Amino acid sequence: MTLPDLRLGVNIDHVATLRNARGGRHPDPIRAAHLAILAGADGVTAHLREDRRHIRDEDMERLKRQLFSPLNFELAPTDEMVALAARLRPHAACLVPERREERTTEGGLDLAAGHARLGAAIRELTEAGVRVSLFVEPEIEAMEAAAALGAPVVELHTGAYAEARGAGAATELERLRSAARFATSLGLEVHAGHGLTYHNVQPVAAVREIVELNIGHALIAQALFVGLPAAVREMKALMREARS
Image (cartoon, rainbow, N blue to C red; front, side, top):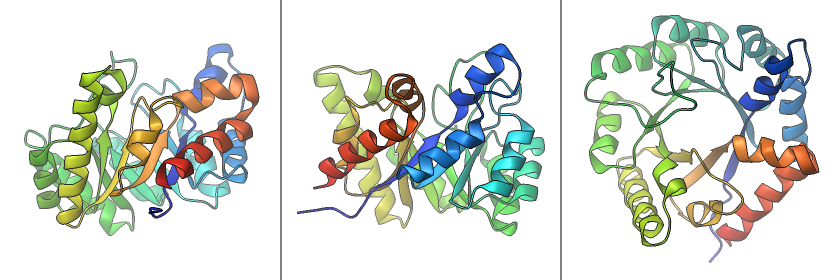
């Protein structure tokens, strides 16, 4: 049985990382966003961090002005970032935890500890017309907390699955399946991402309840060798194969 199509959001953060390593304007992450869409991506994701290590404020401004496909703004639920997202009004905003010393986002939000702050952020963004998702661990309790907070979407953190091997990978995949099923039963839309590659994406893509994957590092790394359009088309082909 063929499952419904699975959307691909391409994270362009590491195009900006490469640009910032040398200074100047090239490679341009906004050009990468356009190329990804033309190659079949369904949307673009960009994470504006507190330290602006890759994506910068002007990148977000340009993406909002120039991109006519869905823009997913990843951000920490701070007053500064929430206010910026509410002003820019992207299609979606994914609230993520952020620690300055981490290389990349290392886990899901602590929904219990951040309940009041997250609730306020969800309300402000929703009032601005932005669809909010919460980046969470694939745990039943997290799905319940997300639903209670009023977020319409959860993005399951696939990092533990991506790092596991053998029986551990099977265990983590079952955690993702169970969380996705339960989230859907609560009326939440389910996305997934973090650490997904050309080698491990298909089992996650085959989870029927997941409707969107957000992938960045693996795509940009592959693009160095084959070009971004080819890298996007290859990932989309793997996702379609898994859904069929």
